[in-house]
Image (cartoon, rainbow, N blue to C red; front, side, top):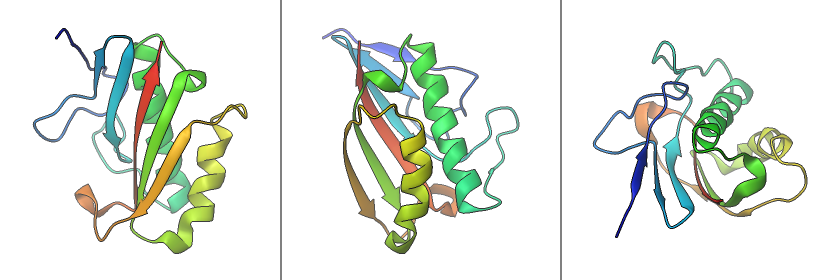
Length: 126
């Protein structure tokens, strides 16, 4: 099995024993991203909209490093700590796509790393 590890300084450095993304046979698996600002490593979570935008910008930076964009995303997983706030996240999430939306699941969880409100992972293909 050949895999390529992908990391970029344009997205936050991993905060544990994982990489930002792994590519295998033309498929890119992006680790869950939270609202860490890449330059400072600090949380960018003034409100849920800001938090969600930072997550999507982090994902976009990783896609770009792989030579991809949101049109190549096959599947996403959204983790929320409060499903009642799904509409807020969904509006911002949806604005990053051109209408050719990927498959997706959204799951409510009791807590996320650094106690953020949203984390999103992606799978994309060349």
